[in-house]
Structures are given as structure tokens and as C-alpha cells.
Length: 233
Image (cartoon, rainbow, N blue to C red; front, side, top):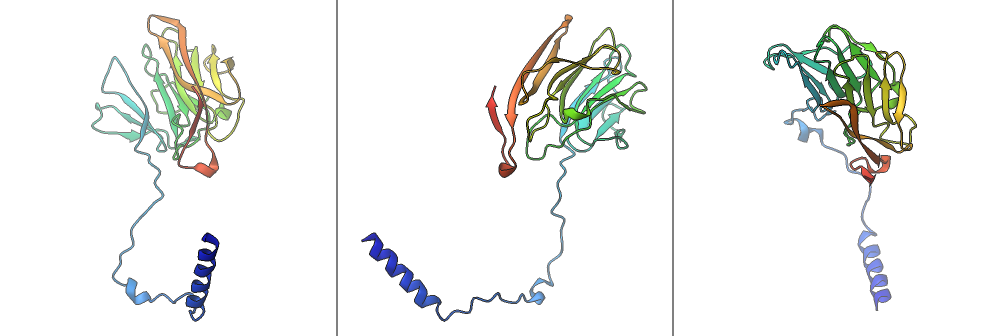
């Protein structure tokens, strides 16, 4: 019965379309005269704040990093802001940490650590020793996305960097990196595999030698650009 119904439908469609001209119709441009053009993108979403830190001895000084709009600094408690990272290698910011005993020292990890459809990659880790007036690239360019940076509270030469790595493929440059010479050299001190990067990392405020790192195995696929998949927590 289904086969007979399918054949009948094909015959009916063939009959109906036999006299139809299937050529594309010309657009009458007069119909568009009353329409005004409007901007529909691209949407960089630079207003999405991904990292923030405050000078504890002067709460008016705030650093805010955005998903694709660099770093902004306020010296007025957030009333006024100015961009301070526009001349450097990445517009996407993943982490900011101020050395509270010497607030002139500021470390920045580039590459947003939130794997989503508008995530952008970074270009390594940067250091400022003049309160954000200038920054120097301190390496780790291959990490792509840095989700956490932690400065040792007593020794600013000791810094931990939590790298998430590329969202789009396997990478050896994931895990936790440590420097003891202010960024001149780096040692990878935690590595699981080429698919697993940092989901979060914190330091015990009572014991700076105790660090907790949450590792996250994830992957984004180009054929599903609006989704990401958690493979294992």
C-alpha cells in the first residue's frame, strides 16, 4: 500500500510541475528603497569580562580582562577605564594576577579559558613591572588559552600558570607551568595528557606551597561550532 501511495504522489507532482517555469525570478529593487542598512556583526563580545583583580591596598585600582577586548584599568574605583593592552600580541585575556606586596607587578595570561563558540586564542603570558604601563612577553605562546595565573605572595619570581590549551585539537602544551626566576624559564609540573587542561587552579591562602588544580578533558569540533563537548571531568 505504501509503495502504491508513493508512486501516486510522484505522478501527481510530475503532472503539477510539468508546466512550471523554475527559473529564478528577478528582484525588484524598488521594493528595497524604504529599507535602511543596519550593522549585524561581527560580534566580538569584548564586553564579556573573563578576568579581574584589584589592588588590595588601594581598591580604586582595578584591572579587568575581556574575552576579545584586551585589558582595561581603572584608578577611580571603576568610574573611568582606559585600555592598556592594545599594543600586544593578543586581545583575548584569560587571567590576571597582581602581586599584592608590590602592586606594580602584574601578570596576564592571554587566551580566554571559557571554551565556547566565541572563544579566542591567546599568545602566551605577559608581565608588567610598572603597574600596567608596559608589558613584556614571558613565553608559553603555545599554550593558546591560559585560564589561571597565580603569583607566590612572598616571592614574585615564583609564578604558576594554568594552561587550558587549544580548544580545537590535542596539544602537549596543557597543564600547570611554574617559573622560579620571574618567567625566564618554565617547568611543566603537572601534565595529564594531550587532551586535558586546567579547569581551575587555586592556592591555599595559608600555605602557598599547597595548590589545587582541577583538570578538564574537553574538545570542540568545527562541525558543531555552537557546542562544546565535555569528555570527562
